[in-house]
Length: 156
Image 1 (tube, one colour):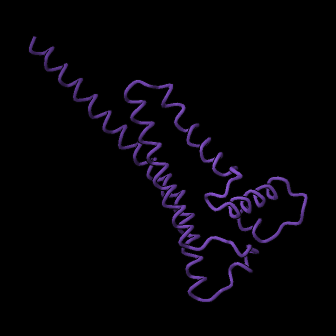
Image 2 (cartoon, rainbow, N blue to C red):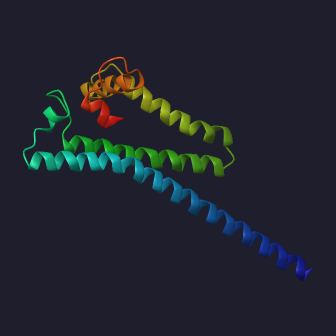
Image 3 (cartoon, one colour):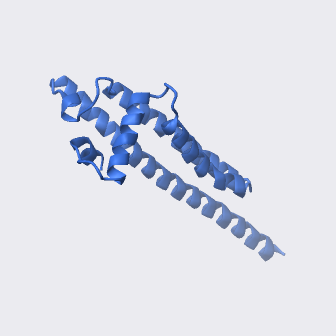
């Protein structure tokens, strides 16, 4: 009887250790992906800040309209994405660990659908001119029937 109790305790301890190891791996993978994603936006914001400090006319270099985003606005977008993606990942882990597998599986789809709806929204919110500029550039990259310009090359 004592041996059985000891083996059950070992089994529960092994389950706890495996759960903590699984959580650590998920957090590490999630943190790496978020940092990779937001580091591109942060680096672009740093580039624009350096250009502004050194009086480089980056709007003309990148063929931007006069309503282009400043480095502060790009950092704001990077901050929001850095907050939204880990929140979605946390919701996924919470739902999955509580047995709601179907709801957990819909979490990434919901995140991408909301981001796509914001990107394609025709309303003047979330930097409308910049979103349409980005969509036009992506369209020219995906369907290269026109001449490729520097912004297309830079984004590609």
